Length: 237
Image (cartoon, rainbow, N blue to C red; front, side):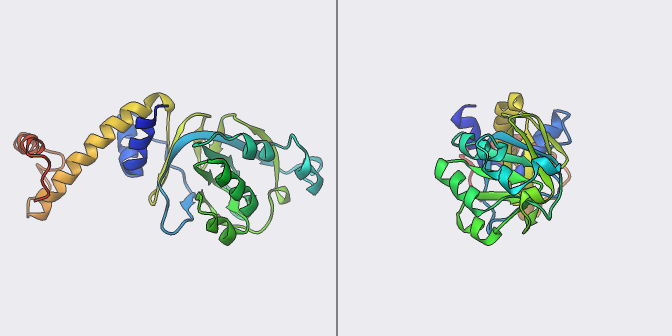
């Protein structure tokens, strides 16, 4: 993924991204039950690095398991690449944590862009103080071993009712979290930027009293006005 595409996806809104994907026939890409925890929300755009939990099994969900060097969450914390987004399948269970402040601190130090999960965050106030972008179901006291068994990393997962494949692009802001198939990222970024440029123009017209029909979406007259506006350097008045 080139830096320019990621930069553009990080600049346009999650709402714009959903519209661009809808135009391409892709609808189920906005996570349910996953919300920004930072105040204000931190925008996030980066390739997904995935971690999957499965239902608790007693021999795989003990405090001793946490210390194993091959324990998937430990591997994920140390292997998620710089600039990636750690996406955790927390099975949609909000009252069990999948990360806490110590792991969030380590991710921040390693240059990971953020964490997204449909599970909870333990020691949430301390985790937020780290300054990493966090999108999750909310605070939760119990550790993951209270109800999950860690399964694997870098495999397809479900998060917030959406399929996430390693390398998919995660876009998130105050409106929520959207998953962009990697193969579509460049065209979504390009067309999304143009969509927001036109929407700035449309808002100027509506502020001046223009009715919405004919402006959004534009008729031929408005398209001509828009072309002139672009030639004039996109003036704010």
